[in-house]
Length: 501
Image (tube, rainbow, N blue to C red; front, side, top):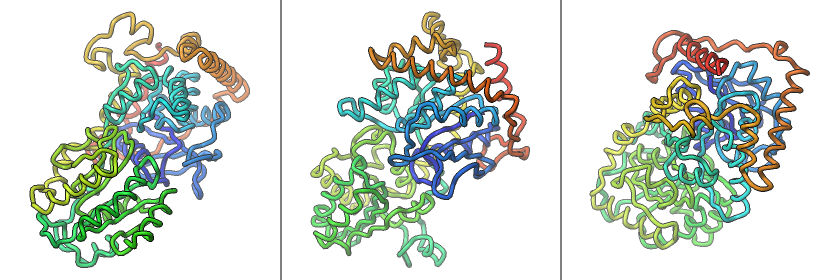
């Protein structure tokens, strides 16, 4: 029974939020019980049920910046322990390097003797003060985690270097999309479609070839933050429009850079060529994308970039910066890459416009190709295999493809997972740095003492066990198992093996 925890979840839109939700629902379809914990949002506090019985705990904690909770280290432990025992959770799966809930949950879970997995969705540097502090915190958390998942090979390399990990304990499982929700237009819009797609009455699907006088629409959907390349976009738009008079922009998203974007439009008098939609919900993204021909993604750092997969699925040609894991996402015929520089981005966009006008790019085939490449069902199956590996359901040879040497295996335990013994945990923490290592050991000892106190003050027998969401037997609509019995059998196997250990 996996337990996903992060500061970032619905109703806030974003790639991490969508990833957690999609994988959770797929795991439920495969017979698992999945619980999510996040902080409270306006109007959402306490327990909520989402699709297919997905249970979400919205814990009222103080949010300090970009939906990240204030780090308290220990104050989350009592409610965390209560939820774990109520729901009979066996595996803790944390998401995102900047999620305070994630780091604290992994620390508490190891103290309670639970298996842990961490998924990294982002890239960080090594030189600035913020990155140094974040990397040290990540090293603390991942020193005592059973397995790590990264969304791209570039992300894996970055995480291994930042946290000094053994590459064998890091798997690469990319993001995906629900391709049926990102279909391109294939006919003139009827009255119903016109309501779904704003300002698009009588619009038809983008043409395969465009003449020199046909209008090309460039779509940008992004959070308007510095790391998403908003400054680069602001500098490039006037030059692109000056070189290509028959080009229009549609920009959706919100953030602190929105005011800079609006000022650029007023300064250059481009309001008639650039349409600002503001924030859009995830279910409206496709309706915005199908209005365009090109998707422009000027990000300065990106571990994966799910939005460019969604754009390609909608039949858009993608122009993006060659940063992070973006080059791994789509094949070459779907993209034109640019350096994260103004001149190169303008040049790459011009090249993409020329390709579309010449008819050399068959964007009508993109959707089917993307559908064959990315699937949340595949992501869930691979994630489930990680759970099997760390729980002992798979042998070392089955999990890694070969048997790991006795020295490495003996230090970490069966299938390369971490030992729960406090002395072994302290040894791992102590190696995190001259001063940081001692501080981390103190945190682990205090956490263990709090755990003992909670066991005495609030015994497990006093905590009611929550009933599972009732499930119908049979096959789910998404192709996974939707039976309660297989999930309970699997959970029981995890529990029995942990007790034997």
